[in-house]
Amino acid sequence: MNQEKSAIALHYDGYNTPSVTSKGYQGLAEHIIEQVKKQGGLVHQDPVLAEYLNELEVGDTIPEQVYLVIAELIAFSWVLNGKTPPGWEGLDKINVEV
Image 1: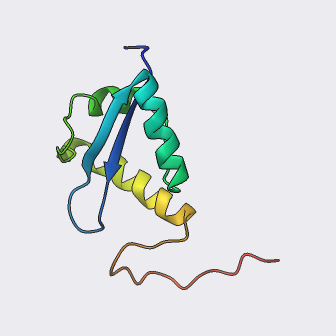
Image 2: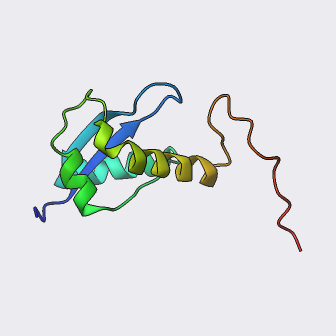
């Protein structure tokens, strides 16, 4: 596995398949990570997934083989930011105060 620092940024609009919006190595990877954090995005570290996604080009949509893992990461990111997917009616907010 490549030990070079890399970053792959994905975009999901709530309707279409997520796509690669930027990718880079070393200094550019650090810049991408910094920008994602500033925008409140999730930074997920997974060397195996990163190696797989590094095969994609900017503008490519994610392959069907990784839909589930990417969907789980996006859903987790949205929950952390207090968002829900467009059109999702789900459960009412749960009061967690005891």
